[in-house]
Image 1: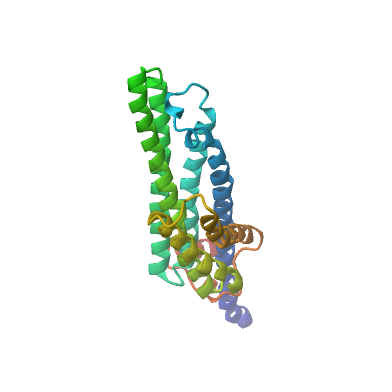
Image 2: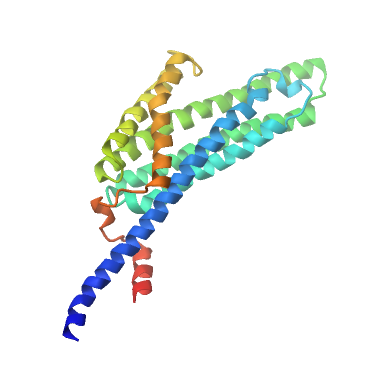
Length: 265
């Protein structure tokens, strides 16, 4: 009887650790899925947008616009999963550095908002095309300029959002959190610490006019960040966080702790 009373606190502690590990695994899986979805949605969207992005006279031309609508549909999910990935990671990453973790969430929300502006600009092109596409020659010329302006807004959002902001958030901040916490292999996290600043610097150079957004230097600068984000998502889905990371053993100072205590009582 006495032996049982002595060992019960140890059993309780072990059970709580098991609950925390299960919780962290679920968060890792959710974040990994969100990251992979960002790839599934963002890359096809670029190809689906080809008719409007590659044709200056798209707004006054005839033809189907279904692919553009599907591109906008996918980018809506891109924006939502971008926020979802940061929110899923926050309960874990805040244990390493709450300020940086909160900054990462803020950057992802800002990035998604910028992406949303780009989506709206292209939907505006479609709306004007449907309502005013049959305008006369003089009106068509001015309408074409409006369409090109809206497409230019989308191009700018693509530069600022997935370019500059993603490098700061997914690359620098997330890479720092993963490297310091040892939640992932540090060699993998280094890809984010290197690729993030590189792609953000490249985006700023494009902004300053040093080279074009669609150019060889810009493409090369995105490679480390591309590999980092894709590897990060796949790693979290397949393996999750490093179970030996110290911050996984720390109690979570959220409402979840209360739910854990109730489930273990």
